[in-house]
Image (tube, rainbow, N blue to C red; front, top):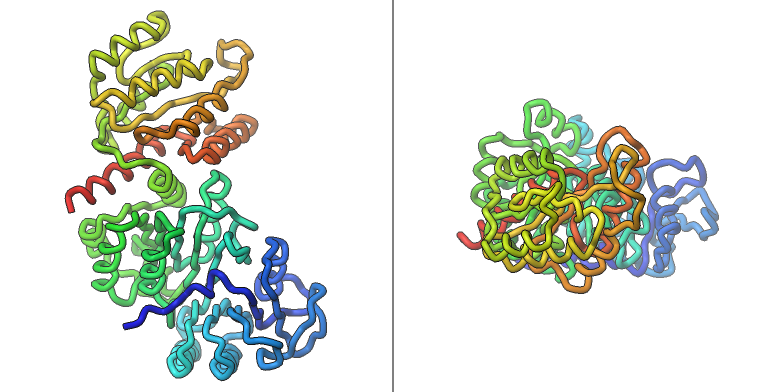
Length: 473
């Protein structure tokens, strides 16, 4: 069977927005048009409203048939019953790429909603239409200026995102962009009446711009087909999978969200084992794993070298690694001899974990110890636990050492998976802001930085398990 060509969804040169009100700014056609304009979308925009002449300075057309061209993409934001007429008009014109923002179909669970969704599917089949939705945010692509939602204008990057939830994928594009991690393409697919997760996965599997796939699903029409496809794609590109509706309460909510069936938990556990996907459970974990898989090389094993300061922190950090299934190995004698020559014996603990206060003050020391870790055969991954100097610390005012460290790693690369933690969590808003800014600075150099050691350890565990699965299969 021929795979549908979805390119025009992400790189349209012209867009018709069907259902743009003259006023009353609210979510829908007018807000989508406004966001496209603010993002600097370079293509042609045609607002459709039979009762208006001009909106936001643009000429308004009464219907699609009156446009001067057949646009590449139609975004439909009218009432659910009206969408059927719009689809038939698209079919007559040869306009095949359609995104339906409107809701009021299968997800509301009424006979009228079920009938409308069945009619939508029948019209799409009759005319050979490619339809995203209904009940969804649709396509997103910063490279083409198509950012009517999410991070606006967004940044281009390695992520390919597929989600049944519009709210979650919108938040992910914003969250990842704030860390310097951009999106190649994202799709909010809603009810997936015509095009389904299978179509989007197959497309992103072949898209060279997509390096890592983030997938959020609440339910699926064909579990066996999904398992086989995900297993195949995951061997080419890592898939980070968040399954919604994992509990009874969540499953009960799923049907009123997208009209999907959530499925039983034990079946999904089997799915994760068979496919080797990276299984996550929260937004933070989703972003953390995507960042690690997008930016880090493959680890050869699960031995982690912990660089940082503070005896208590070192003990706790070692525990976190072990709890995540990682190892904290003894360092080679060559590395230990190098550390003894360079690490002050007073106030430090030489070994793994390494308690070395100079890391917080001097980039040259950080780089020197990193290079020792890169050469040590027992070390597969490195975590540098940093801190932001504050009043409670007995440390002098000094220049921030991290820009120099970042520049070194930017120029020389990460020879082994290397991440940083920035100790800024807690109730201090100033500290939190400084920590977020520093993590973003690391991110712009494509170096993962996490707000807690626990999150860093879990991200590295996901990274290790994904590549271990590839080697085993």
